[in-house]
Length: 258
Ligand SMILES: Nc1ncnc2c1ncn2[C@@H]1O[C@H](COP(=O)(O)OP(=O)(O)OP(=O)(O)O)[C@@H](O)[C@H]1O
Ligand SMILES: [Mg+2]
Image 1 (cartoon, protein in one colour):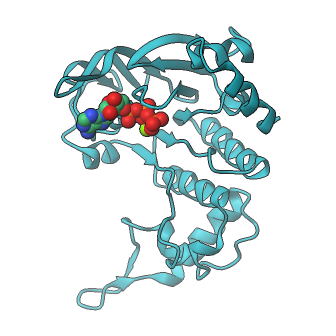
Image 2 (image 1 turned 180 degrees about the vertical axis):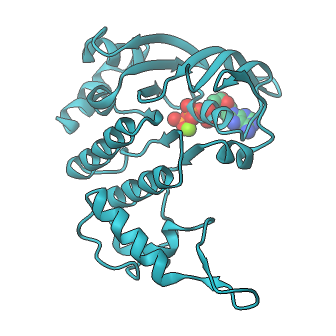
Protein backbone atom coordinates (compact mmCIF):
# COMPACT_ATOMS: atom_id res chain seq x y z
CA UNK A 1 0.00 0.00 0.00
CA UNK A 2 1.29 3.47 -0.78
CA UNK A 3 1.74 5.91 2.07
CA UNK A 4 0.15 8.92 0.48
CA UNK A 5 -1.40 9.63 -2.84
CA UNK A 6 -2.77 12.76 -4.45
CA UNK A 7 -5.37 12.32 -7.17
CA UNK A 8 -6.15 15.20 -9.48
CA UNK A 9 -5.50 17.83 -6.86
CA UNK A 10 -6.20 21.44 -7.75
CA UNK A 11 -5.34 24.37 -5.54
CA UNK A 12 -6.54 27.90 -6.14
CA UNK A 13 -5.60 31.05 -4.27
CA UNK A 14 -8.28 33.42 -5.50
CA UNK A 15 -7.67 33.43 -9.24
CA UNK A 16 -4.15 31.95 -8.99
CA UNK A 17 -4.23 28.33 -10.08
CA UNK A 18 -1.25 27.07 -8.07
CA UNK A 19 -1.74 23.31 -8.54
CA UNK A 20 -3.33 21.83 -11.64
CA UNK A 21 -4.65 18.26 -11.55
CA UNK A 22 -1.63 17.01 -9.61
CA UNK A 23 -1.41 13.26 -9.07
CA UNK A 24 1.51 11.66 -7.26
CA UNK A 25 2.31 8.78 -4.95
CA UNK A 26 4.60 8.58 -1.93
CA UNK A 27 5.77 5.04 -1.20
CA UNK A 28 7.23 3.83 2.09
CA UNK A 29 10.98 3.19 1.85
CA UNK A 30 11.33 5.43 -1.22
CA UNK A 31 12.59 8.92 -1.91
CA UNK A 32 10.35 10.99 -4.17
CA UNK A 33 12.13 14.05 -5.53
CA UNK A 34 9.98 17.05 -6.22
CA UNK A 35 11.70 19.30 -8.72
CA UNK A 36 10.62 22.62 -10.09
CA UNK A 37 11.59 26.21 -10.66
CA UNK A 38 10.60 29.22 -8.54
CA UNK A 39 6.86 29.61 -8.39
CA UNK A 40 6.21 26.13 -9.82
CA UNK A 41 4.03 25.20 -6.84
CA UNK A 42 6.42 23.11 -4.73
CA UNK A 43 5.69 24.89 -1.46
CA UNK A 44 1.97 24.79 -2.13
CA UNK A 45 2.19 21.07 -2.81
CA UNK A 46 4.08 20.29 0.39
CA UNK A 47 1.59 22.41 2.34
CA UNK A 48 -1.17 20.20 0.95
CA UNK A 49 0.79 17.05 1.90
CA UNK A 50 1.45 18.36 5.41
CA UNK A 51 -2.12 19.42 6.17
CA UNK A 52 -1.48 23.14 6.07
CA UNK A 53 -3.64 23.64 2.97
CA UNK A 54 -6.70 21.70 1.84
CA UNK A 55 -6.97 20.83 -1.85
CA UNK A 56 -9.56 22.97 -3.66
CA UNK A 57 -10.59 19.77 -5.41
CA UNK A 58 -9.26 16.25 -5.88
CA UNK A 59 -8.39 13.65 -3.29
CA UNK A 60 -5.68 13.00 -0.73
CA UNK A 61 -5.37 9.34 0.21
CA UNK A 62 -3.32 8.49 3.30
CA UNK A 63 -2.60 4.85 4.08
CA UNK A 64 -5.32 3.71 1.76
CA UNK A 65 -8.06 6.05 2.93
CA UNK A 66 -9.31 9.30 1.53
CA UNK A 67 -8.42 11.85 4.18
CA UNK A 68 -8.87 15.52 4.96
CA UNK A 69 -6.40 16.81 7.51
CA UNK A 70 -7.89 19.47 9.74
CA UNK A 71 -4.45 21.09 9.91
CA UNK A 72 -0.73 20.46 10.27
CA UNK A 73 -1.18 19.23 13.83
CA UNK A 74 -3.37 16.35 12.70
CA UNK A 75 -0.98 15.47 9.87
CA UNK A 76 1.89 15.45 12.37
CA UNK A 77 -0.04 13.16 14.68
CA UNK A 78 -0.57 10.76 11.80
CA UNK A 79 3.19 10.56 11.28
CA UNK A 80 3.88 13.24 8.66
CA UNK A 81 6.92 15.31 9.60
CA UNK A 82 8.02 18.42 7.75
CA UNK A 83 11.58 19.68 8.03
CA UNK A 84 11.93 23.27 6.90
CA UNK A 85 14.99 24.86 5.44
CA UNK A 86 15.45 27.18 8.41
CA UNK A 87 15.49 24.26 10.84
CA UNK A 88 17.18 24.98 14.14
CA UNK A 89 16.58 28.68 13.89
CA UNK A 90 16.68 28.93 17.68
CA UNK A 91 20.47 29.03 17.96
CA UNK A 92 20.53 29.64 21.70
CA UNK A 93 18.59 26.50 22.53
CA UNK A 94 20.44 23.43 23.78
CA UNK A 95 20.68 20.39 21.57
CA UNK A 96 18.87 18.27 24.20
CA UNK A 97 15.95 20.66 24.44
CA UNK A 98 15.76 21.09 20.69
CA UNK A 99 15.60 17.32 20.22
CA UNK A 100 12.54 17.08 22.47
CA UNK A 101 10.95 20.35 21.43
CA UNK A 102 7.21 19.81 21.57
CA UNK A 103 7.67 16.33 23.06
CA UNK A 104 9.50 17.03 26.30
CA UNK A 105 10.12 14.12 28.67
CA UNK A 106 8.86 15.03 32.10
CA UNK A 107 10.17 13.95 35.48
CA UNK A 108 8.61 14.03 38.95
CA UNK A 109 4.99 14.42 39.95
CA UNK A 110 2.81 17.46 39.73
CA UNK A 111 3.45 20.16 40.92
CA UNK A 112 7.09 19.19 40.63
CA UNK A 113 6.92 18.06 37.01
CA UNK A 114 9.69 19.67 35.07
CA UNK A 115 11.60 19.14 31.88
CA UNK A 116 14.02 16.26 32.49
CA UNK A 117 17.07 17.81 30.90
CA UNK A 118 19.46 15.05 31.98
CA UNK A 119 17.34 12.43 30.21
CA UNK A 120 16.79 14.66 27.19
CA UNK A 121 20.50 15.36 26.87
CA UNK A 122 21.44 11.71 27.18
CA UNK A 123 18.92 10.52 24.57
CA UNK A 124 19.69 13.38 22.19
CA UNK A 125 23.45 12.73 22.28
CA UNK A 126 22.96 8.95 21.91
CA UNK A 127 20.75 9.49 18.90
CA UNK A 128 23.09 11.99 17.32
CA UNK A 129 26.02 9.63 17.69
CA UNK A 130 23.90 6.98 15.99
CA UNK A 131 23.20 9.40 13.09
CA UNK A 132 26.95 9.96 12.74
CA UNK A 133 27.08 13.38 14.40
CA UNK A 134 30.02 12.40 16.57
CA UNK A 135 31.18 15.99 16.95
CA UNK A 136 28.27 16.71 19.30
CA UNK A 137 29.26 15.36 22.71
CA UNK A 138 26.94 17.14 25.11
CA UNK A 139 23.22 17.83 25.09
CA UNK A 140 23.97 21.19 26.68
CA UNK A 141 25.74 22.31 23.53
CA UNK A 142 23.80 25.06 21.76
CA UNK A 143 22.15 24.43 18.41
CA UNK A 144 23.87 27.58 17.15
CA UNK A 145 27.20 25.76 17.33
CA UNK A 146 26.04 23.09 14.88
CA UNK A 147 26.51 23.44 11.14
CA UNK A 148 23.58 23.70 8.73
CA UNK A 149 24.03 20.09 7.64
CA UNK A 150 24.21 18.86 11.21
CA UNK A 151 20.97 20.67 12.00
CA UNK A 152 19.25 19.01 9.06
CA UNK A 153 20.55 15.61 10.15
CA UNK A 154 19.35 16.29 13.69
CA UNK A 155 15.89 17.30 12.46
CA UNK A 156 15.52 14.24 10.23
CA UNK A 157 16.82 11.97 12.99
CA UNK A 158 14.51 13.35 15.61
CA UNK A 159 11.50 12.98 13.31
CA UNK A 160 12.43 9.32 12.81
CA UNK A 161 12.98 8.86 16.55
CA UNK A 162 9.45 10.12 17.20
CA UNK A 163 8.02 7.69 14.68
CA UNK A 164 7.51 9.70 11.50
CA UNK A 165 6.32 7.56 8.60
CA UNK A 166 6.62 10.30 6.04
CA UNK A 167 9.27 13.02 5.86
CA UNK A 168 8.82 16.17 3.85
CA UNK A 169 12.18 17.85 3.38
CA UNK A 170 12.03 21.36 1.94
CA UNK A 171 15.31 22.20 0.20
CA UNK A 172 17.41 20.51 2.93
CA UNK A 173 20.65 20.69 0.94
CA UNK A 174 20.32 23.96 -0.92
CA UNK A 175 22.29 26.21 1.44
CA UNK A 176 25.04 23.66 2.08
CA UNK A 177 28.53 22.95 0.83
CA UNK A 178 29.37 19.64 -0.83
CA UNK A 179 30.46 17.79 2.34
CA UNK A 180 27.50 19.02 4.35
CA UNK A 181 25.05 18.17 1.59
CA UNK A 182 26.39 14.64 1.31
CA UNK A 183 25.95 14.18 5.06
CA UNK A 184 22.28 15.11 4.71
CA UNK A 185 21.81 12.87 1.65
CA UNK A 186 23.32 10.00 3.67
CA UNK A 187 20.85 10.66 6.49
CA UNK A 188 18.02 10.53 3.95
CA UNK A 189 19.22 7.10 2.88
CA UNK A 190 19.19 5.95 6.52
CA UNK A 191 15.61 7.20 6.91
CA UNK A 192 14.66 5.37 3.73
CA UNK A 193 16.22 2.14 5.02
CA UNK A 194 14.07 2.58 8.10
CA UNK A 195 11.01 2.54 5.89
CA UNK A 196 10.11 6.22 5.78
CA UNK A 197 8.48 7.64 2.69
CA UNK A 198 10.43 10.77 1.81
CA UNK A 199 9.45 13.78 -0.27
CA UNK A 200 12.62 15.65 -1.17
CA UNK A 201 12.11 19.15 -2.55
CA UNK A 202 15.13 20.49 -4.38
CA UNK A 203 16.39 22.74 -7.15
CA UNK A 204 19.49 20.61 -7.43
CA UNK A 205 19.20 17.87 -10.03
CA UNK A 206 22.50 16.34 -8.96
CA UNK A 207 21.34 15.92 -5.35
CA UNK A 208 18.04 14.53 -6.56
CA UNK A 209 19.70 12.00 -8.83
CA UNK A 210 22.06 10.92 -6.02
CA UNK A 211 19.27 9.61 -3.81
CA UNK A 212 15.96 9.69 -5.70
CA UNK A 213 13.85 6.63 -6.45
CA UNK A 214 11.02 8.56 -8.10
CA UNK A 215 10.94 12.01 -9.66
CA UNK A 216 8.21 14.51 -10.22
CA UNK A 217 8.84 17.75 -12.11
CA UNK A 218 6.41 20.60 -11.52
CA UNK A 219 6.07 23.37 -14.07
CA UNK A 220 3.54 26.14 -13.43
CA UNK A 221 1.54 23.97 -11.07
CA UNK A 222 1.42 20.99 -13.36
CA UNK A 223 3.23 17.65 -13.23
CA UNK A 224 5.28 18.05 -16.39
CA UNK A 225 7.13 14.76 -15.97
CA UNK A 226 7.05 11.85 -13.67
CA UNK A 227 9.61 9.03 -13.86
CA UNK A 228 11.66 6.51 -11.94
CA UNK A 229 15.36 6.22 -11.22
CA UNK A 230 17.33 5.25 -14.30
CA UNK A 231 14.66 6.30 -16.78
CA UNK A 232 16.26 9.67 -17.60
CA UNK A 233 19.75 11.12 -17.75
CA UNK A 234 20.81 14.13 -15.72
CA UNK A 235 20.81 16.25 -18.87
CA UNK A 236 17.23 15.23 -19.62
CA UNK A 237 16.23 16.10 -16.06
CA UNK A 238 17.92 19.50 -16.29
CA UNK A 239 16.17 20.19 -19.57
CA UNK A 240 12.84 19.30 -18.04
CA UNK A 241 13.44 21.48 -15.02
CA UNK A 242 14.38 24.38 -17.23
CA UNK A 243 11.34 23.85 -19.42
CA UNK A 244 13.71 24.29 -22.33
CA UNK A 245 14.91 27.72 -21.15
CA UNK A 246 17.81 29.09 -19.19
CA UNK A 247 20.13 26.28 -20.17
CA UNK A 248 23.18 28.54 -19.98
CA UNK A 249 22.40 29.41 -16.39
CA UNK A 250 21.87 25.77 -15.55
CA UNK A 251 25.16 24.73 -17.10
CA UNK A 252 26.79 27.27 -14.81
CA UNK A 253 24.98 25.82 -11.78
CA UNK A 254 26.10 22.41 -12.79
CA UNK A 255 29.74 23.45 -12.93
CA UNK A 256 29.45 24.78 -9.40
CA UNK A 257 28.17 21.51 -7.97
CA UNK A 258 30.61 19.36 -9.96
N1 LIG B 1 -1.04 31.80 0.17
C1 LIG B 1 -1.01 32.17 -1.10
N2 LIG B 1 -1.85 33.12 -1.58
C2 LIG B 1 -1.84 33.49 -2.88
N3 LIG B 1 -1.01 32.96 -3.79
C3 LIG B 1 -0.15 32.01 -3.40
C4 LIG B 1 -0.09 31.58 -2.03
N4 LIG B 1 0.88 30.62 -1.94
C5 LIG B 1 1.38 30.49 -3.17
N5 LIG B 1 0.78 31.30 -4.06
C6 LIG B 1 1.05 31.39 -5.51
O1 LIG B 1 1.08 30.07 -6.03
C7 LIG B 1 2.12 29.91 -7.00
C8 LIG B 1 3.06 28.78 -6.57
O2 LIG B 1 3.83 29.22 -5.45
P1 LIG B 1 4.75 28.27 -4.57
O3 LIG B 1 5.21 29.08 -3.41
O4 LIG B 1 4.02 27.03 -4.28
O5 LIG B 1 5.96 27.98 -5.55
P2 LIG B 1 7.37 27.28 -5.26
O6 LIG B 1 7.55 26.25 -6.30
O7 LIG B 1 7.44 26.86 -3.85
O8 LIG B 1 8.41 28.45 -5.52
P3 LIG B 1 9.84 28.74 -4.83
O9 LIG B 1 10.83 27.84 -5.48
O10 LIG B 1 10.08 30.17 -5.18
O11 LIG B 1 9.71 28.52 -3.35
C9 LIG B 1 2.80 31.26 -7.12
O12 LIG B 1 2.20 31.96 -8.20
C10 LIG B 1 2.45 31.95 -5.80
O13 LIG B 1 2.43 33.33 -5.93
MG1 LIG C 1 8.68 27.40 -2.25
